[in-house]
Each structure stands twice: as structure tokens, then as C-alpha cells.
Length: 422
Image (cartoon, rainbow, N blue to C red):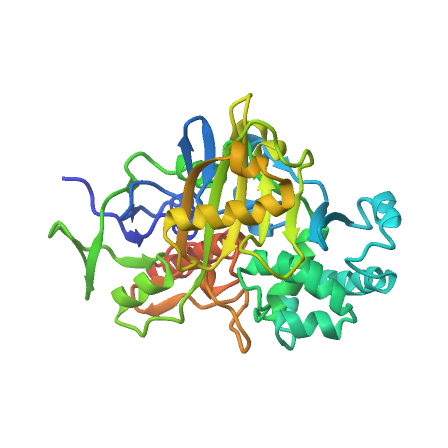
């Protein structure tokens, strides 16, 4: 019989994997129980007909402090986006560049209809605010909504509606921009301090790198936890485990059901459609934003232009993100998205783009509206021997998930009498 681990972690997403890495690093045995057929949670990548398809468009912000702490960026072979975007407005594409990284592009677009010269000055002021102080201090500032924070910062209505609404609407999966201003300042800080990137082999490579640092057999996939009882974990199979501590690292709904707590507010949903085409509709490694305020698609990216390994050599793969979960059948949704994108790129969208796969993701990102509990010092202990982690407890991001996993591990070690030295 295999030895009983000191800690059982429920869920092999980024939070659970980082929790396990921390425990094993300090000599605390643990097992991760994962109900699905693989690790990564929301950060998974499928291989389909030679294409790499992330389960929903996602990126890694290289300035994330916890990601820098936990990941080997060189081994991930990160491929970066250019620090600018293409914004669709009034029937045309307009470039919006980061004035600090691409000053020439920024100067040539002074008269762009997306924003004014005053907006560029407001970016400088807001950038300074977001970079001031520590992250912990930033996450304790008075908060309002993202929309109100942008307006209060002096941005014009045109800049908010045509750039920030689709951009941060895509980041937070919240086009109404109700997300707390603390998250706005946090991600603004991360964008200003590093690159936007994807691993050459897909976002799922992040979870696989984390899992590769665990002992063989530490992760049990297709192992669903049915219930928790005092001192025991009961599996669907009827097996009972009796660890000294349990860490719940699932999404909010699954965690609430296991803990017997009230189910949290619905998470933000997103729908991602992938299309294969011979010729990429854009040739730059940038994000394309819908600044027109109508149409299904919020943003688009040609992923193999960023990372060539996302598609075979003779093809391109287009990722189109639709916020929420539209009340269409899968085929109706493909038809509607094609029709929208044909207004951007012409009839070849109907004639040459082949639908590859659609992902409807009901739990894509937790809501974090003010008054929020976004912080970096969340106490993950529920009761003796029971802990929780996940991005909903800290910043709703890859960084928040990873950091929360570490915090849960440290809390469990402290309770079990293990050293939590760095």
C-alpha cells in the first residue's frame, strides 16, 4: 500500500500545482487529486490537426512576480507580442502603441481617432500611479470600478470606449468594466514592467512545467473527490484517504460544494473560437480589439504570428474571443462570428477560414467587483487541517493563482509544524 501523504490537494490547476511544489520543496509529502484527465485547470492546451489550441485565449505577463519565482521562462521558450494593438473603429484598423516602448509609433498616431494627446499624457500619469509603491500597498488602495477609475484618471470617452473597454474588457472578461480598480492598477503595472507572452508550446506548458517538478505519482488524474469528512477525503470510488491536512484548490463553485458553503457569484464566462486559414489576416504579433461597440467578437489574435509552433508551417490559426456564452448553437455561433469578422477582413473569412474548435468556458475568471477582497495576504485556513487556494482569493490572474497556492502551502506547513523558510 502506498504511504499516506501528509497533505491532500484537491485540484491540479496552477494553484494546486504551486501548492504541491512548495510542500515537496520543504519535505512535506502530498498528493494532488484531479477530477479531469490532465493538469492545468483553466490553463490547458489541446493539439488538434497540428494546431495548438489554448482553452480560451490567455497570455502570460512576464512581470508577474510569482511567475518569475516559480517558472523557468527560458525553458518555456516564451514568444512575445509587440507592445501595441490594432483597434477596429469606423471601418478601419488603427494602431495604438505603448509610447514608452514604441515612441515613434506613438508619435505617428497622435491624431488617431482612438485617443487624444491628452489621453497619452493621462497614460503617463496613470502609469506612474500604478508603478508607485509595493504591490501589497497597491492592493490596499481605496477602490472603485475600472470604468470610474479610467474616467477619474482623465481619459477621454473615446479612449475608454474605443480602446480600454475592449482591452480591459478582454483582460477581466467584463466589458462593463465593473472590476475593482485595484485589479486595473495591478495589471497596468504588470503590462508596464514586462512583456505579454505565450509559451512556444501553448499555455498548457506552464502547468506541465510545474507538474514536472513533482515526484512520480504525486498527481492522480481522473480522481474525483466526492466529499470531505472530519479527517478524511472520500473519493467517488469509495476510497478514503486520511491526510493530516487538506487543501481545496478547485474553482469557487466546486470548492463551495465540498466545503458546504454558499456558492459564490457566477464567474465570468468566455467563448473562444479557433479558425484555420492559409493566409493570416494580420501579419503583426498584436491583439486586435473591437473598438466599434457592436458585434460578437471582442478581440482577435493570430497566434502563430506570435508563436509559429501554434500552427503547421503552411497554415495560420486565428483565435476569436466572445465575452460570455451567447445563446446560439455551436453552428449558429460559428456563422455569426464569421459574418462579423467578414466585415473586418472580407469575404475570404467565409470562403477560406475553416472552423477548428469552439471552447465555451463557464468558469473563466472570478468576479472581483468593489467592495473586493483583492489582496496579497489572504489567510487560507478554513478550520484546523483545512485550507483553500485559488485566484479568487487574491488577484484573479495566473499570478494570483500561483501565489495563493504558495500561501496555502505555507499555512499548512505552519500548522503541521514544518519549517516555512524560503
